[in-house]
Image 1 (cartoon, rainbow, N blue to C red):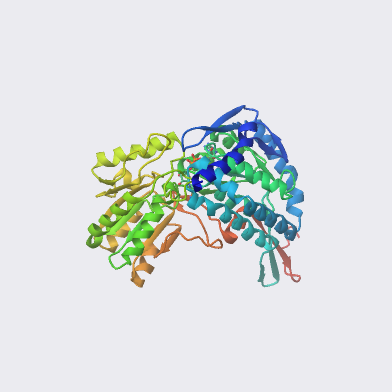
Image 2 (image 1 turned 135 degrees about the vertical axis):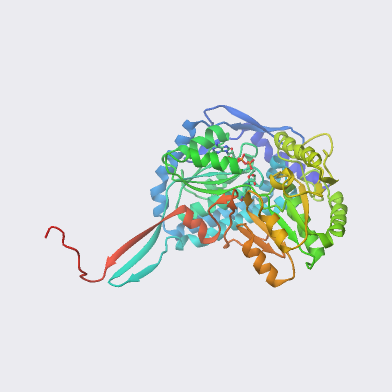
Length: 502
Ligand code: NAD
């Protein structure tokens, strides 16, 4: 059997239970159907039905929030070393079920096996990293002033809501849920309606690993009802959200009445800037990887190439040749580099940008068309000859779609790079150290990689500026979000107190 046939057979055994029972919510340790009935989820590979999914109402969200509130005092009070043990058990169980998770994720989202097979292991690493931080999460500082000693300590903020998108749902969910649990918060998770499978698996893993009932609750459903209800719920103290910038703005409004703390990881139109003095072969590899891996459905994708005029022609020719050779195919085939886009709605959006690019006068050098007749496959697309004001240079396409703009010198490159609404990540290719230091200092982005593609180091801060986000997570930044800092001031002597009315 080919590896594709083997994986399809394995997938079938994993999907059988979803086909039979659908995807239920998990509230207070129990499987419960949504009160709003159900909706169907389909695979982007061939649009076939995967299963039905609980459609949650505000009432279901209320039940989940109450469960999270009820479980909070004991979970928050648990010794961090105990929480650490439970989170490591969750990581162990993720590793044990990594293949099942990867198979389901590929089928549910269209992401290629070559990337998803590692994503589950990265998710386990997220749990391990934050598990190890749990015992020290409450630690603070001692700050002395004349006659006074201040002691700071952190406390988990309370039950929190986690709302996730569909692009790499399992990994992203753990990126939020693991630090929340390590901090001592309880969680209500609302996964994206387009990709519900692996969120269900995660909630089962947590239950089986001994996470107490109510500490992690799963509510499936749509953004406008279940998502909205979660952001408006008075018992939910904070919302960690990953998704589109316009949804982030809606959530900020929805959470205003309950003064919700929010952390937003939003969209991007990230530049990769290639200077003539760079190692152009490595830059080429990184440019291609950072826009065509994960189907281009990646918040940190380098969707805008800024290449110096002096090397642009040669760079574009090599780029075009490589992009045309990228293997589009079944996500479970080991050879596949680009799989189908998540859904017809998203496919239509990405394809609309092909028409927009052409009508704006940019040159479509590769792709720009559907691949095959079944599923939501798009040929990897490359536009050159773009200018900064074009919509294909300004708006997030979120697909295997690269827009290239040329520049003359450093000043112009910086001007173009910063001339967008977004500011998530930036990639800089140069061997000139002074240029790299100056340019990265002025580039408007939350995360910058110099002479590298996106290589994540968990203790570093992750997040964007401008329309790309609010707040940071990663390392201790995650605990700052999920915890409140309290300061207690002790008088060290009998200082003079003003005697009013004496
Ligand atoms: P989306 O904003 O449409 O949906 C994300 C989640 O929000 C879903 O679970 C959805 O149901 C929910 N939602 C929608 N409306 C809501 C509302 N009114 N109230 C509460 N919840 C609501 O995003 P998407 O299309 O699923 O994901 C793609 C987007 O995510 C892209 O813009 C991408 O850049 C972004 N993203 C950002 C990062 C990052 O780290 N910055 C990472 C991955 C994806």
